[in-house]
Image (cartoon, rainbow, N blue to C red; front, side):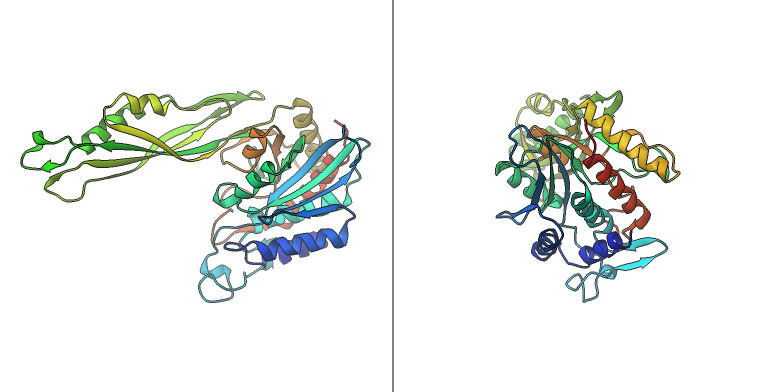
Length: 372
C-alpha cells in the first residue's frame, strides 16, 4: 500500500493541466524500469504497454486504462502563484489530497502496479494505457484508437466508488454520453417600432425551444439497469440592442445520451422555419456487451471486498462520459471501475482514499489473473 501511495503522490505532484508531457514521462520511465513490457509513447503523448501472449494472434487482450491529464488546479492546489506552480500534494487522514488525486492519477498508479504484478493466464495479453486529452473530449483515446489500439476488453479506472452504497467500489456496466448542440434561429432585422417588417429570431428560437421540450429524453436498459438520459436548454443568446428586431438567436442544448438512443433534436429543428441544428460535441455513451466479462469483473471485486470485510459491490450505471465511450464505439467491451467518489473530481479539495486505491489495485490484479 505504501508503494501505491508514494507512486500516486509522485504522479499527482506533476502539473499536467496544460502540458501532459512530464506526467507521461514519469509513467513511461516507471514502466520501463519496473516491467518487461513493450512500452510505447505515441505522437500525442499517450503511454501504452503490453505484456503476455504477444505472439499469439488469437490472444485475448485485457487493458487497464486511465488518463494523466487533469483540469486546471485551484490556487490552493499549487505551490506557485496562480495555477502555474508545482501541484501541492498532502497525505492526511488516510487520503491523498491534490489536483488529479481522484481524477485520476491515483487510479492510474493502481493500474500501473496491477499491470506489473498480475500474471495473465495462458492466451491472455495484458495492456496498460494512460491517455492524454480526456478532459477535453478524449483526444488521446481517439488518437490511440485511430492508430490501432483495440483491446478486446478494458477496465477504465474512472470513479465507481460509493455508487450502490458507501464503502464499496462498484462496477459500472454503462454510462451516459454527452451531446452538446446548438440551434440557430435566423430572422430578418427591422426597427422595433415596426416588428411586422421583420422576422424575430428570438420568437423562432422560442418556438423551437417549445418543440425541444416536447421531445422524450433518451432511455435504455443495460444488464437490467435502467439508463435514463436528459435533455435541457442551457443557454439562449439573441439580439444586439433594445430597439432592433433580432435576426439571430442561438439556443444551446445539453443532452445526456444513452446506449442506443438519442433525442430527435433534428425533428424539433425542422418543425420551425429558419432554424438550423449543429452538433458541437458528441461524447459517446458506453455499454458493456460481454456478460462474462461484466460478471467476472464483479466477481473479482466481490472477492476483494469480502477479503477486506466490506459490503458487496454491484453492477451500476455511471452518469458521466469517459474514454470508455470511445473504446466501446470502436468495438472494445469496456467497464468502469475506479477509486474516485462522487463529488471529488474537479474540486478545490480533491482527494482519494489510500485504502480505496489499494482496493482497486487488488481488483485489477485479481481480474488480470482470471479466466473468463
